Image (cartoon, rainbow, N blue to C red):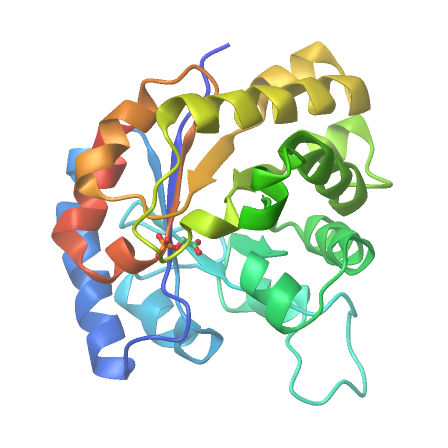
Length: 258
Ligand code: PGA
C-alpha cells in the first residue's frame, strides 16, 4: 500500500503570537512544494486560534492545505481540571491532530503509557488524529533495550483500541537521545525500529491495517537528512521540532517525503 506521508511541525513552547502568525503564513504560502504530503502545524495551545485563523481553518479542514494540531490534551472530556484542554475544545478550534505522549511530557510531566492510552482514546472519540510518540532513552539504547522499550510503549500507549481505531492513528518514533541534540538516528537505525513498530501493529490489528498506518521519525530532522530518512520503506514522514520554526527548512523536509 502506498501511504500518504505526514510531516508535522512541533513548535513546542516557542514563538510569540506575531511570529506564530508569520510562520503560519509562510508555510501556507510555500505548502505546494510538499505535493500530496500531509503538512501539519502544532503550535502552543494558546496560539491555536491565531494559527487556525491564518490558515482559514474550519472544522471541515483548511483551504490552505495545512493541517492544525495541538501538542497535548486532557484525557477528560470536561469538568474541574484547571488548566487543561479537552479533545472537544481542540476540534472546536479546528484542530485535526494532536501530539500525544511526547517524550518531554513523559519525562518532564510524568506521563505514563496508561495515561497516553486514555488520551489516545479520547482524541479518537472526538474525531482527532492522534500522533502517538514513542522512543528509547540513550541508556536504554546502549543497554540494547530499544526493541523492548519501544514495544512496551507501543502496546501500552495504544492499548484497548480496535483495529478500526488503530487505523486512524499516526505513530512517531522519536529516539529521546536524538531530540534537540543534533544527533539524528541513522536511516538504518530508524528503519529497524519502524519495522518493529509495524510488526507490532500487525499483531495488534492486522497486516492490512498495519500497512496503512503512517509512522513518522522524529529527532533532529533537518532539510539535509530528510531525504535519506524518507528513502526508508517504513518511514512515512517526520515530526519536526527545531527545524519547524523556520518555513523554508520545514517545507524542504516536507518536500523530501513527496
Ligand atoms: P527536534 O524535536 O526536531 O528539535 O529534535 C523533535 C521533537 O521533539 O518532536
